[in-house]
Length: 381
Image (cartoon, rainbow, N blue to C red; front, top):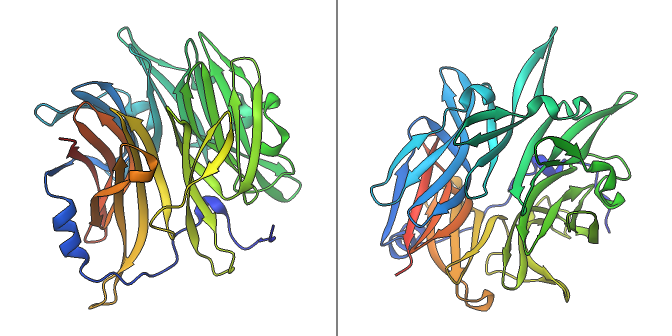
């Protein structure tokens, strides 16, 4: 594997320009029958999850005056109205990166900036919302994971899993380390049981970015050094650790096993990032080549018999030579029949699910240089 030291995978952007002719004509063709809801007060949605056949929960980041604030709530598909949970005070000056639902409660994870003396740093946050109210579990997160961020949460048949990334100082050097926590009535720390490939040797760009559960197991994945890492947690230990070049930032359970996606690095050492997509099951890991080679797989999903992939790719207007990003959604009854059902310039779809007769995607649009949170609804009929 080629050794690289010039940039952090967590901060890597899409640094390539693709010439796409007639992109606005393509938008009109693929986006017929699609509705886009702009979410007031939010500028990005980080995750959407299914609640029932007419409701999705969402989580992201908004603004309160000049301060960012993590926000979450429910969108009702019947009339496209929405409400916000009363949890923003726990994420003031921060963001909610992940939300999970177990049929009766919502777990939200993120981070917020806090002050200590003359310093300001990120504190990982975890909040549980039930019918009885809100419980803040942040104080139970081990303090040595601050500074840090909770980046992924999931429900796994009797307990919650919480993953993220934190900073560690060694002399004058700063590194990132992953953490994995288990929440029942209290938080316990599973980090020491993670495979060594998740954290050794100390590096940057390290963390757990996605957790997805199915069949009483959970797929734990992220990145370390310039490799993606994953392992399957069975409730007591970890099986099948694996690593390869790239980063996994999204996953979902399906009849084919776990779908995963993220990005890889160009072998030409030109700073490009390439789409990473595949499956993992008992027969091993299987990489799948997508139509779009340059870009990032933001989200994968399965539901209602449909496989879903949301991508973000770079584009250029060949008339004005201005650059932008384009959000794309692929859907199909199988991975070999994925077809484009949505594309729009200046849009990013960060999370995607199926809900009854709809594909629902959450993300943002860019208007006059400013982000505005959106939820996209695509009719499956």
